[in-house]
Length: 223
Image (cartoon, rainbow, N blue to C red):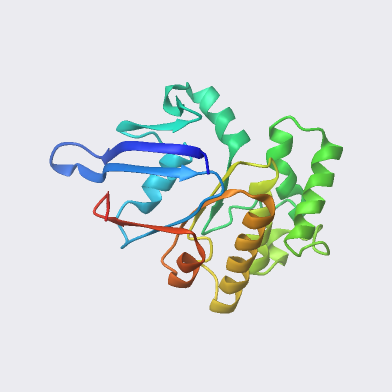
């Protein structure tokens, strides 16, 4: 498989002087197209920080991430935001759905922000909500959906612009065991159907076992 991202010697610290905390200490890894990767490790090991930098939500203190051979952090903030919107989907532990909008409107939102016509975005969103088993819940607002249904909407929203990379941070950490298993199975099926690259931060060993690779972080380094 060809390389999608090359993570090269990432370092990241927060604070300064006596209050400085080194969170990432020289992380390097290759993410190939179609990979499924679990990032595991104890709390504070740097998993979420690494995921956020891979998703360009944060910049490293030093190091590079190459996409198609180009260092994405050489882009200015506007170009980086455009790259992120076009190429990366995010699913978080808390769904971050907009409570005043329906499931359909929440899924359409990134496409509309990206300049897609409303009719096209609506058709895509309806299809994706069907894919995640919510064809009959289009008009329901987040408060009218179960936790598992809310996370399914979040997954559909992350996929609306057909990203090449899907990043998930503890996507089932707020769900019960049965619902977690359903979401795990859904993520696996979506990844296979759409041939998307998937990187997940998780403490769930069963979810990690579903992935092709497991990367364990200890004190900001790959173990």
